[in-house]
Amino acid sequence: MKLWILTLGLFLVTAVLAGAQSTPESLVNKFFDTYLAQGTSAALDQFYATNKWMDRNKDATEKLKSQFANLPALVGDYYGRDLIAKKTLGESFVLISYLVKYDRQPIRFTFELYKPQDSWLAYSFSYDDSFGDELEEAAKVHNLDDDED
Image (tube, rainbow, N blue to C red; front, top):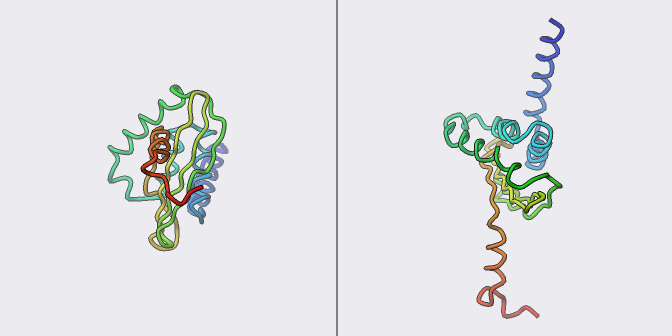
């Protein structure tokens, strides 16, 4: 009985804290905390739990979770993250991108968050390793500014 009450209390605290996420950064930080403590699936579940509309896209979410679950086995141990960019559209949409450091190679995690009224919710999450190609393209002569010294 005590275990049941403790479990219920923990669930309620978690639900209150999830609802109290007041900034995009706090949602992303919570994602990384959950990712490190409980793994890929729990991190995505926690992130998408902020948006009731994600239930309508279960197939895509489950596919992402399945693919994302294999990431640690492919790239090794996690060593931290560096902010790449934070871009906003007005006051209601934010994209936050991180370079996530692993043994084998870095991976870019991209979070999109939306605030329709009072609270931020998950809009999209993706990860990829194609940023190297983007940097190479940006460094090509035809993309350089003539004014640069």
